[in-house]
Structure formats: structure tokens, C-alpha cells
Amino acid sequence: MNSYFCGMENIFTDVYFMKKALQEAELAFDKGEIPVGALIVIDNRVIASSHNLTEMLHDVTAHAEMQSITAAANFLGGKYLKGCTLYVTLEPCQMCAGALYWSQISKIVYGASDENRGFMSMGTQLHPKTEVVSGVLAEESRDLMLRFFADRRKN
Image (cartoon, rainbow, N blue to C red):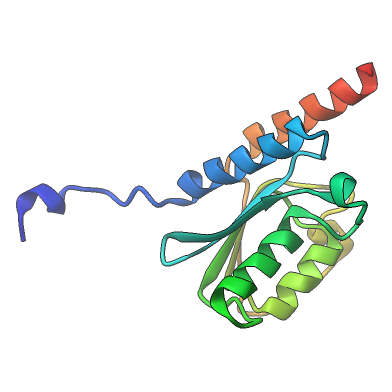
């Protein structure tokens, strides 16, 4: 094998994809939506990306994760997301965790924890085979959320 390629590292890390989820969260912020962004990846390929749309759609279920789950299932042509990873800027809520359970997603990577409404504090179970990684770009995710609510309080 060419030595040029031997030294290359894989750029498709959890941080790489979380940065893309943060870009989605910024889109939500700009629309006046709670700034949560999500994307679903399979084999280092983004197959779905979204952000919160609850205000725009007048739909309490239009969380970033729910939008991405639906888009990924449509892309794959099936309801199960085995082999997929969800990247989301905020710990999923109980509703989203339930949908993720039923999707049988393989991995969830989230940024900031949600001590009040996150699935961990609510005791919501994920599928037993789902791997969870927390705290990836947590500070950036948390800062965006704090900035959003500070702006809302000013107005």
C-alpha cells in the first residue's frame, strides 16, 4: 500500500459529525427554535439531518431526533436503524429515546446533558444493543442553548 495513505487518520470521528449537528442547531437558533441539531450516519455517510421544528410546524413531536429518525428510515427504506449512529447536540428526551429504542439504532452520541428532561434522568430505557457516548462537544452545545435562552429573556 502507498505509504502516503498509511499515515492518514480517519477524519470521520464523533467530533467531526457533532460539529455538523451543531451547524443544524445553529439553523434552529436562527429560526427561533430551541437550538438542537441532529444527524444520522451510516458507514461515515450522513443520511439524515435536522433540527428542532416544533415552533414552525406547531408540533410538539417535531424534535430534531424525530425528524432525523423519519428521514433516515425513509432513506433506508425500513424502520430499523441498525448500523446507524445518531449525533445530537442535546441528550434526547424521553419521547425521542422511546422512538430511538423502537428504531434499534446502534449508537447515540450526544453533546450536552439535560438533567431535567433527558432520558437518563427520566429513567428511559434504550434498546439493549444501543451504545451511548455522551459529552462530545458538550460545552459548545450547552453554550448555544444558554445563548438562546438568554436572548429569549431579553426579548
